[in-house]
Every structure is written in C-alpha cells, then in structure tokens.
Image 1 (cartoon, rainbow, N blue to C red):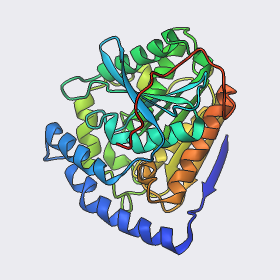
Image 2: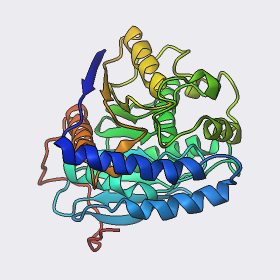
Image 3: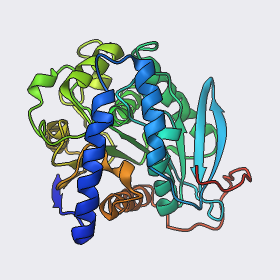
Amino acid sequence: MTTVEIDPIGGRFERFKAFLIRGFLRRTFFRVLGPPHTATFQRRCIEWLSLFSPVPWGVVRERAMAGSVSVEITAVPTDKSSGAILYIHGGGFCVGCPVTHRTVTSHLALQSRMSVWTPDYRLAPEHPYPAALDDVECTYHEMQRAGYAAEHIVLAGDSAGAALALGLAIRLRNKNESLPGGLMLLSPVTDLDRSAEDRTSGTVNDPMVRSAWLDQILGWYSCPSGIPEHSPLKIDLTGLPPILIQVGDGELLLSDSTRLAEHAARCQIDCRLEIHRERWHVFHLQARFLPSARAALKTLASFARSVTQIPRRMKDSNIKLNEVRAEST
C-alpha cells in the first residue's frame, strides 16, 4: 500500500476560490441533501446545482442501451482507444445521473483518451439494493459485447458510485468472471453497516455530506447487513485488480478510504491512497475552477491507461463511437 498526502496547488488564488466554493457548497448541497427533504426534491436540487459546474469542450456524447439501462458514452472524437472507463456516478444511491457528473466524465475522457460509459442506474428508495448494482453489472457486460476486453475496462466511481464499482468487482470475482484492469475510487463509501455517528473524521469541515443524510440514504438503499458486495472491509479482497483511492482530508468519509486501503494492503492488493489536503468530498466536481481537481483527474486518467496498458493515443481500433456533434453540456 502506498499512501500519499497531496498539497493544494495554484497558490493563493486557488485557495481563495476553494474558500468561496466551500462556502457555496455549505449553503447549498449541505442543506438540500438529507432530511427532511424527499428524494425527489433532492434530485431536482442536485440537477439544478450541477449547472454551476460547467464541463470542458472537446468531447462527444451518445446514448446507448445496456439491456434496459440507459448509458451515456463520453469520448474524444479524434481518438479511438481499445480501453474504456465504466464510471458510476455518486449521490448516495438516491440522487444524481450521468448529466450531473459530466464535469468528471468529460475530464476523464479528455485526459485518458478512453471512452467513458456512465449508466443511468435505478435509484433508491424506489429501487433499493440490488437494483443499482444489477444495472452497473449489465453495463459492464454490454461494454464487453461492444468489443472491450475485461482487462481493458477500468471501474470507477465517486462516493456511493465508488461503493458500486467496488461491489461490482467483488461480485465478478465471486462469480469467477473476467475482472477489469483496475479500480478508481473517489471518496468511497465502504462501510454500509456503520452508523453516521461513528464517522468522526472531517465532520466539521466537510461542506458536502452531513451525518443525517448518510443515515437517510443508507436506510433508503436497504442493503442487508453482511452482503459481501458491500462489505469490503470484512471479506477477503484477494484477487481484485489494482486500486487507486482519492479522498479529501476534510471528509466525513475519510476513514472509509483509509480503512479500505489498509485492508486491501493486508489482502496483498496493489493499492494507492491519495489524501488531498484542504479538500472535501468529491472535490473533482469543481474541476472547472480548481487546478488541484484537474490534477487529480489527470492522475486518474494516467492510472487508467497504465492498468489497461493503453497508450495515450491509439490510431487503430475496431471500436468506434458514432459520429455525433461536440457539445459542452
């Protein structure tokens, strides 16, 4: 296991922007996520607030179907690669969609030159466990049918999406199916049985996640205790592919990441843990404004290429993305 603490970059100007963003998040996300608000209300607020995280130019998007699951595919039109990233958006299993996480998926596509598949999986509480996990598994198999070898696919996700990515890898291993080339976990939720009161790290500084919301969404997801797919700290992880974990040092969920990295090391998994100082839960969503967030996404892209052995540019590939117009939203 390798643990690296990463200082903010960008100097005073980035620190000032980070200060403003932290205040904005505390007055918006922090207040609308959690009780007494309903899931429908939270989803509408998050979709509206995502408009404040503009996405970069230079990517194309298309819609595909993985069985009954709608999937958004993001790619750079001038580059064809034999590798792909299955990115599972976060939102506590109950909010979010591919559109709300386009900042992250667009940067990953631009930096890795790999296509990024983002499933619009079913959400709780209308669809509790295992609906979301079944949908991301369906997407993984659809990617293989589209021509991507399992070892050329990287599973990635943030927060609850990271829990689903890790859960899918565990499910695939337990079923003796072909495993992906690697895992990229952004601020993962790794202990669904643990009460919010037990998560003491970063409780004052995290402007995104509050304890009451964590209790709410875990109740809505309704995952039975002891399910192997969502008990990564309690089961043997031997056989899983290399893992890169990125987390902020001011997070409510910081201990979920550190404990996972420590357990992965005990299971002889190649795992790198990056703790970003002065950063909050899934700070990558503010990549448009923070150089440190863009640098973190660049590291993720480099990791994806390395574990799949995909060079930065590949001219020849039998995998093609349909011609669609470039868009910024």
